[in-house]
Length: 309
Image 1: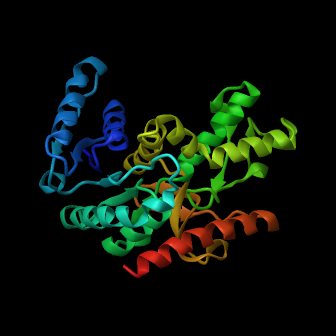
Image 2 (image 1 turned 135 degrees about the vertical axis):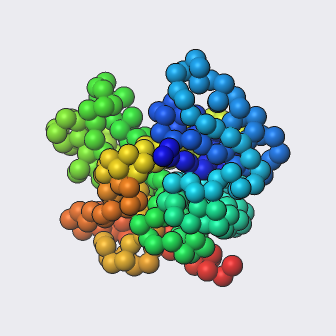
């Protein structure tokens, strides 16, 4: 039985998710978008790349959710992108309605799927999808830390002129300006980062990581990042579809871990066929714990706004 993935939103992130899933031959894809013709056209275009790229998957575009029935995973990318000067949080209420409708439809047609949320503000939107879906917490997960860690690894590799494949990095907390890159647990082939560069350089890279999305928004002016976010979402989907049990930093629902209760925050998790199969609780220093609390508090503020909806 072939696997099936629904991608909600046929914009830049969603279309690239569909293309990457096709390239890896992970599953058949249904691309859903409210704009008539866009998911159908992009779906057909990706399908016609198959003979050249050498993949055999079915991909269909639709404006409703009929074709999505019995999907294994739903990746929700739909929503309004950031514009220069906007924070992810500015998108909160506009994107809440998008998430609400998408989640309701996903649950109706694929009640046993796992939901991966990509829409910003990420942690709050994942919380909304969790509330609306009424799924168990292991079947709702947010894409944040994989992207943030990729950015951190990219900047470290670039600074040290080494292969990014040899760089390990951990970023926890909310997907925003308060994210927590854990320098102590980051390095190159087992060599701690603190032995490879001075504190000023580390601080500069940490700051650039926190503002990684804003840097791209500033360049693009009319949209936000999509190549790296789609790559991150598909890495998560692949770990679930293939039961690879990768340990990745993702937005997960915490019930006391790290002293955080009833909130989606980025932490290292094991992703397998059951979704989030384990949350890893790392012993943090007092400083790291304080930064994580500050980040969680920022997420909590947004969630409180949503509770009034």
